[in-house]
Image (cartoon, rainbow, N blue to C red; front, side, top):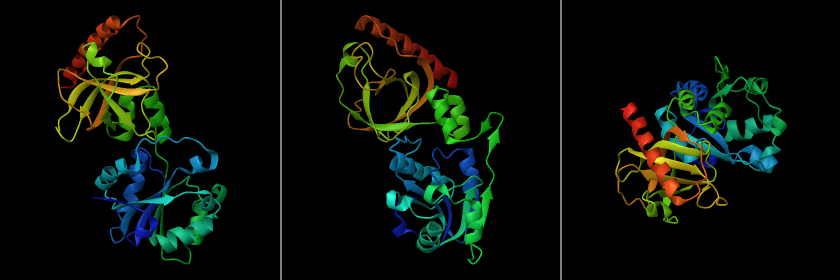
Length: 306
């Protein structure tokens, strides 16, 4: 299994690419191909953690893929190690040349660097591909510059994937990612109201750093390692306007025609299609009737897939 390691544990020398690689979309994959081709060196991805903008500007940066979620994806692409470089204000003051010398050349012992044509790094992002070209003149290091990838709608980027997910456009997000988007969480105890109205739900505790699609009710696949099957489900993502309109956003999953105790298990959710937006009902009976309709719509969606 691919390793998630610190710079001090790196297996060197390396063939390396640096970046967040959030989502590992088609553009990222093209860059990774140039890393893997240097088979005589350890194919490596290096990412900053936390995201530099979190440290420098206090921004919350939700990730399409958390580091541990990237491991199997990177392994399938031929990467052997994911190095997390701890980012703090001290590192942010490092000049571009110093970063290359101290981190890439000395610590990670890179022999091949792969970057996108718009790559920027170092203090106030003053370094670019020309900085790298100048720095490697006296070193036996290869530089691969990969052009940005575009389609008919513009540049393929993590930002576009986020926008599609926020707009509940799961199909086009899947095309850019070249895989279905999913997230997971531990099943925790809820209020039990779903069971009272005839639709028991698994309440998921999701890592707060994970990016989630736009709020609404979805048809979704639910899987867990214990059962190793994909279970058709209805997912509610968002607040609870009928039960508790002031409650924080939650993820609740109802397994269709299944009665399985999921408490304390880790459930992976793959949303397939948004059924509707959230609605505030005047009573629980009307909410129950709507969930019954949602379940039948979800069933039809899954029948069409099959």
